[in-house]
Image (cartoon, rainbow, N blue to C red):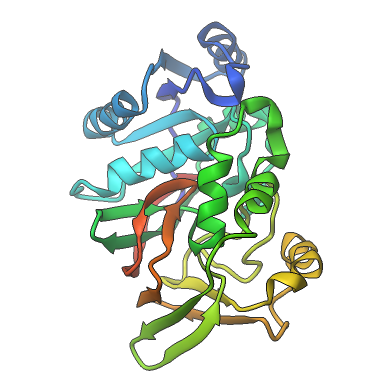
Length: 297
């Protein structure tokens, strides 16, 4: 879709990137790039969710400045509402990690992102949806059940200065005692059963700061990239480097499918995370929501 706008409301997550971008600096950058924008610093995730809905309700579009967590919060808040047409969202990367933009091959440069606000390029993207005892949770990037979710939970508690190493450290901390499970993934026409360590559900390609977890994921095919990982723990020193590089899909220890919807059960129950946030435990129902967001590129 081609449609351009020069007026924007920009919601800044002041904690993103350890506060490296201020309202004043972002406002000056927007002016320099010829964008007429109102910049708000939003103090909490709860208020951010409220404001993105308010802004889109009145203007039809919103720009958020932050990282993957800010974008995920935005998408989850918007997809929980009913809209006459897909809400428009722009992301200005100012967070610690902005893995979602890597799927588009976009530079993680704030000035470049600001300059794109006045261009006419939009991309209608799918969004993933998880449902379980916790309710419903939308995700734009990657969701996990298993050891990866446990690692994400631990990584989220590590201090900001850890940076790119946080997911790897979380993984090392949780792996030794994490239980394998008998996993069943029930699709519309086929069932996967396996003794596994993790289930990955990817809408986009990258997570955990450049890990190319789903190199074949497609944001516009109304499908989610499903991967069931079955390696022995002793294999992981060889497994993880392949996952980081995205060269793991032909290995025997991963089963991959591309499905619109499916159900995941595990014995024992596993933790589940969506875009880095813990949401609950298996079992869960998973589905793709087609063209849910009109994303600025």
